[in-house]
Length: 71
Image 1 (tube, one colour):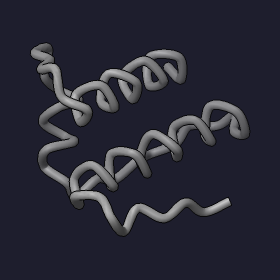
Image 2 (cartoon, helix red, strand yellow):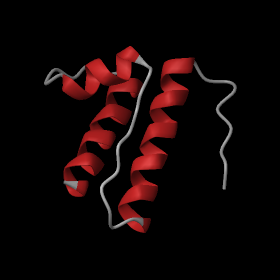
Image 3 (cartoon, one colour):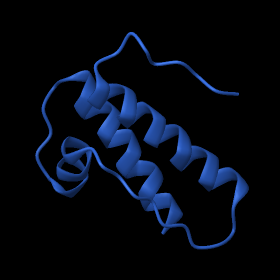
Image 4 (cartoon, helix red, strand yellow):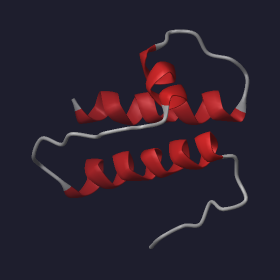
């Protein structure tokens, strides 16, 4: 199922799509996966220990949680 994020800011839409990909990978793959991202705010957010109280940050926290379960 493909979701549409056309009404969202690009960084938020890309972060939500990345979260969906992570969840999909967690449930359906058993091999190593390489994710390539071109959204600097996502890459920076995943590498940061700071968290703000924005919806974008909450999505990044969820991404980090799923990433931790994949490793």
